[in-house]
Length: 176
Image (tube, rainbow, N blue to C red):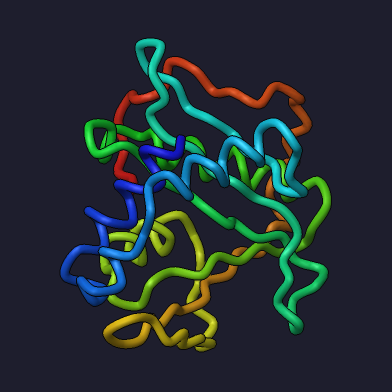
């Protein structure tokens, strides 16, 4: 998971974020973060997609910390290995996470890098609506501007399955 997460940032955001900032993202720190999350716990639910016995992608979701959306759920991370993009893995992970969130929340949100056209299109096709909010974070060499998308979960059927792994994915669709 750490490899997919690190490559997602450094490769997918190349040209979208300042190179000086991307060069500071440390692979070992990413490994430590995910090792800690898996062994010490996290308040987020993490779902992993496996294809052919290998991690193809993952999603993490949980409560939102946005001051105006404390009753909403949030998609915190959604990363799919480059080899499995546009195969349905990302959409399957997203649908599973939104289904889980629907059991506890009436709405869900995700923050997406404003320059990430592929990601923004992916979430819009999955029914998310941009709500007009942005946040800008200073980063080495410039700024990172995110835009917020929302889903209304009231019509979604909650998923209560307890297993944390989705296997055998990758059967068509468009995803990030």
